[in-house]
Length: 462
Image (cartoon, rainbow, N blue to C red; front, top):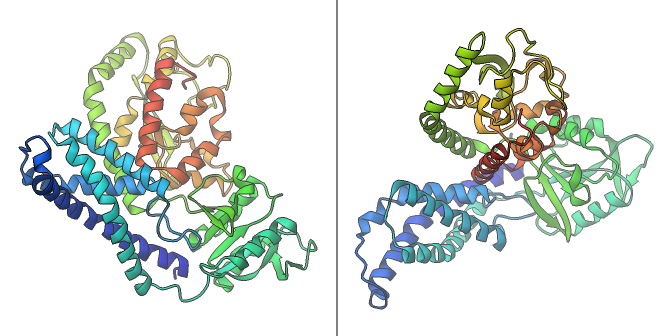
């Protein structure tokens, strides 16, 4: 059974999406009417027909939802409320404008720049109005019948500040069920709230007390312990909140809000929902075959060179671990000597004696990874994501480290463009966790663009 907050959240998101879907055609028709009837005499002659713009509505709807989703316009928590701030909306409008112009260029659609500007401006008050109306309907359909049941983890002054702030917060009041400490004997109560157990008791208490939210208020808790706690109850649909004094030790952030002037971040699950997964897969299905066709002559040339100059198959196959721990066959151009141990961990610094001369060039330019485009097309991988790891490394993952397997591995990712070969892959998961928390179409495009720059500079490839 969903926690009250999650149930309300999902109803709100569905209603907000409905409001946005209605915004696009209404705003487009209003823009057309104003342009052709009200201000036609003040502007150059308008030759476009309304059918031209009506035909773009499906694309506009997709770009609108993708832009709004990428900028967190569908984030809702009991602290933040249903309607994000002005800065987030401005960013969403910017993403939408860029997306529309890019799409128009790619498909060669002739459109009026004035119409686009008017649509972007007019659609915002329409959207705010519709979201307000639909938000009110959502509140009636899925009201918060009771305040969220909350557990605070921590002790001392830091925890007291959080408890005091929760008591002052009016939307909605929190029912603090108790405090958990790292070790018994630290305190019997914190700010008048009884200590009901240790941190290790959280999975049991979440179920028995029907907990909705958990607040981290322990300045001494390290990253590993925190992620282990989140992982232990992540399938029970709990909202985890973290006061930003501890921000630097979070694996990633879903949303930023505040409680009585105390900034907090929500730590959600790594999954981004059905819509985001479909959008990401759609991008993969568009990009992978396109790149395969464009790069086919180059891949054919590399295949011939490797076949003529080396022994063994030009294409190297290796078993890797993908999403949810599923194993798949990864394709790369062969860069190592045939007798080399393919599962040996590569040295972090210095030359790898297993790599051939041609292989070193392929790795430096990342051309050895081009066959992975077929892995993306087959659905084993994505264009962007954590690197696919070898099975013997995954077997040694802790429980919280296994969360890296909650998303599809990618050809490139944050770790690759930030660190590349400078740091050991299996020991540095921070970039992967950050990506999992914040993944979006715009972030993927930024990573892909940065990857091109990194490869052209030949900096620390694999």
